Image (cartoon, rainbow, N blue to C red; front, side, top):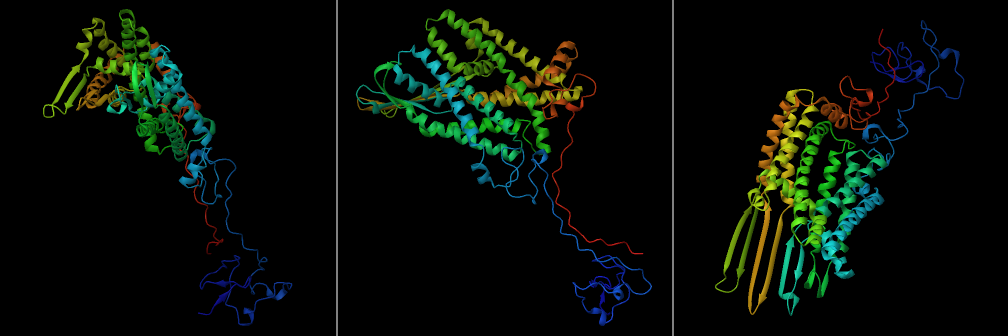
Length: 547
């Protein structure tokens, strides 16, 4: 078949086509050899170069349109999605809600380091302040400046899991040592709470919502928080020669590696939970649904700890009335009131504290001995019968919180499912509380040519704690819908106005809870999902339909 060319622009035409793909002109018969000559672009068009006979004159050829180019709109992309592939590198700074085109190492190094350092330094400062107040009360201000400073830093490092050690002997401090593990949870909660609050505040100020950017900022904050404990752990080493510090003669300090590892793990756990549970963090839809479903039950499970605060207040009052060492008791409350709250909740729920100890010596053929003892609620009530009220207080608080979770739902089946989620959350909180309350002591020494070692632990079994509080949560969650029917309207209105309904809780939390009853206002409705920008379409020449 002879080659065909457009009589208007001279472009090659596919055999059988009736129109030119380049200019759209109608194609006639094949051109002759003389017509194959390419005209001079600068010469004026000749009258004889028009369309073939029988066809109307065609318009002059138009230049081909340029390739398609997409220009991104001004401002960061909507919904936390990254800039399209056509956008220049670096579009969307890490401080905005968009995802930049930088790699993970570049984004980590070029992020908001001032905000991370400020949050970590403020958290360590709050921990130091709480520990200083507690140590001044415990020592009654008689440990001197250097001794009080060292004890304060020991408490700060111990709050993240560092192991304090004491080395003492009448002649040589290296002949005997004691190592212990105890978390002063007041110091722990104060520091980690400050770290989480400043972290979320910084994210809100910079508008960071993309999951990648949130996690990178959390990683920067974790690194800054961990590094600060290196000088703190080194400054804890102090030798007391006159017994002015807690009547102790010898060397004390904390382990550097346990300080760094503990600070890293605590910061990762805290900021990881904050990053994933914060509604500002843009997660995949399935994870968002999971997050919205577990936020309220976890908050309710944390609220159950209020029962432990009531029991601790009663115990502290009785101790101040009956004991002579009131300053030591107050100092212990400043440092470890959190320990008392968690322990009272576990004891009130029926979880026993197991104490185990062992002794080994080099004499008498390597003499070894172990012993164990269990302390439960019946043991505590031997001190005061008032502690029998603690299970009743725990039951009342748990049931009220379960009812508050139930009235947020719009149906009885949904309230029962919320009760089961509350039971799971209560089990998780009890498991974590049992891990935080572990106390361990180990010692080694030698005297008169004989050596020996001793050790002991005091722990709540975390798995038993989780099982017992699962039963508590399931019972309260199943009874809550029945009691919610007779709850006053004022209680229902307060809960829904303060915490929102289950439907209003998924509206990203920016407009607050939806109003009680009726249709939610537009500000409380869940916004439709925002799709990421698609790839720009490819340009194709115009082809009119065949006649």
